[in-house]
Image (tube, rainbow, N blue to C red; front, side):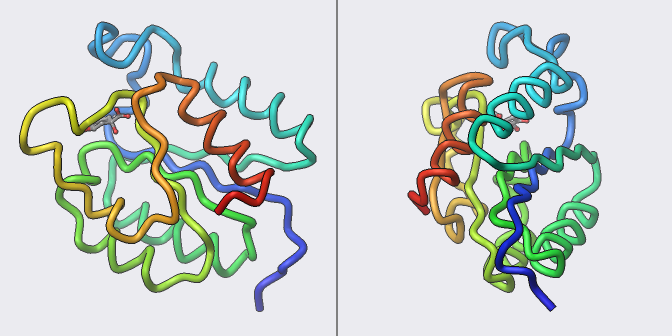
Length: 150
Ligand code: DQA
């Protein structure tokens, strides 16, 4: 049974994002995932929302969490599926299978990078995409949820 009144926003992060801050900082910046979580929690408080921030290196876990977002009646999901963005039909299907709106998030702008990053299976089903703004991409996506812009 879903709870339409939920103010919780799931923030789901895929593979290698646990290494943010250390990982290719010239592309992804020096902010860690914990720092992004802290920044989002502060902003969520101001917006009357609650963040449930998670990271996994496993594709099926992201699928399970998308199902859970629906089952818990989450307001929305911010999804940075990282490399699975470009490969995962399972994530495309999961996003299509739930009513919970999903916003695709990326720190970098994959469309200006290697050709293999130009396809986004997540983007084919997401309500909106925010990319290329570094850590701010997450904040902008959260503000889109708060403003009802999805
Ligand atoms: C990323 C972009 C993806 O292409 C890449 O595989 C990542 C991070 C981003 O946030 O910019 O791991 O999702």
